[in-house]
Image (cartoon, rainbow, N blue to C red; front, side, top):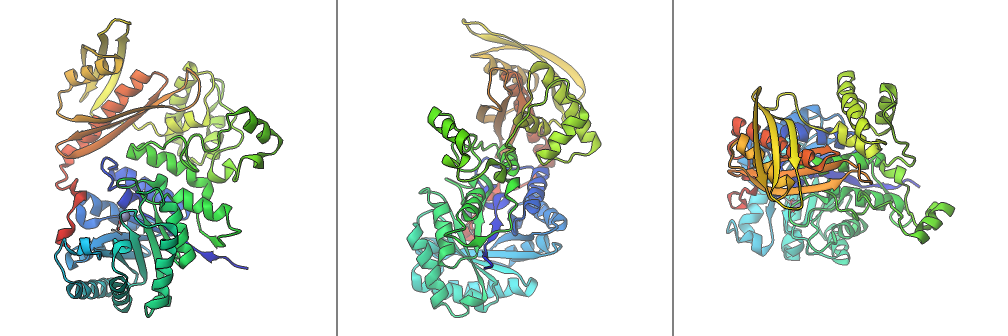
Length: 518
Ligand code: KIV
Ligand code: ZN
């Protein structure tokens, strides 16, 4: 029996990136889009083209590059947004315009439209979008808090005007599984033309039910799930792609649906999204958390050794964790490194491999065994050759009696500058040294350290988020020395802020763009 297909619509680059602080650079957005495309995502929502020049460029370039996925842009329900969206997606092999308006009483009050006025607006906008593109998605935002009759009316109008996908968002994460299934079932039964379109579910996780609500919606007849990697997104986030995909795969017995996702690519993209967004994955997060496949307790380990299925419902390999992780050491050569990286899903060009090899040798000199996670951290070390600020050397003097002292040499625009600074702890002293060498007004919003692997010689990855006049940038670095990793991450964030400042992208942070203008 062939299984029904559930389309996976990923909105990491739109709803996910909209989360305060999760801003990604242009290059990062292209990279994530490529990974999504390679893993088999059916539709990539690449951004909100009217929101900023940066979003427009990202959506356009992703549209031009995508090989398989449908590329979708978001637009509010007005002609200007829709035209801008079409400009951005039109070069995709398979473009889609996604347009929406808030239909619940609370949302209707924002543009102050009556039901009739809103109905006309939906008709006009979907018709306009459909005249530009034959793949149009309509969303009745806050559908789960919209009166049933009016929701049916909006959906019927959108279908008649030519929408090909109807999205029923649970914008504020309010619904519950039974209700989620019933709502889609009701729409399919009641709305004329419903069997001609695909119904989509778009859930937020405010009550922790996004995954359950999405799967229940599929039970009710939805055939598109909207989600993000790691559940990234505003507030408590969106439905996590890895959770719904793995749930459908593992519980095919009771949910006979398939997706086109190559699940072995999940871990890699999860790590990458965590790094570029600066939103670390919680250790006990389903599927992609560090502990998701760790079996620490004696009873569990004993059971696992006898039969893996005792405590595991899926294999780590299925999500891209290599089962047998043989570490590399300082005697491992370039060929071994290439083979290991390829096993982890990285096929690097020769020059990239050379760079990683240099970093690998340096790390292997300091650390006995270099594990898969260490290698990934090395691949993703992102100090670009063009950076204006670089850390040259750092020496920190620590003692039980503060203050601690940091002596630092930085290269700024090619010239070495040196200082020493004190602080309340080694990291504070180090950051003060950076500030003394390169004065800036940026404020530190987040400082986060996590160990890449176990052991006291483990590398630490540090994420830093900085804010300057509404622009936000994150920086990351990894090193066996936490203070060095901290300094590099801080400098990395400053370099990114400098790029933003130089590009001076007006409106870069207008993601909170008002729905009033819809
Ligand atoms: O949560 C939501 O309702 C949205 C819409 C724009 C689809 O993200
Ligand atoms: Zn949303």
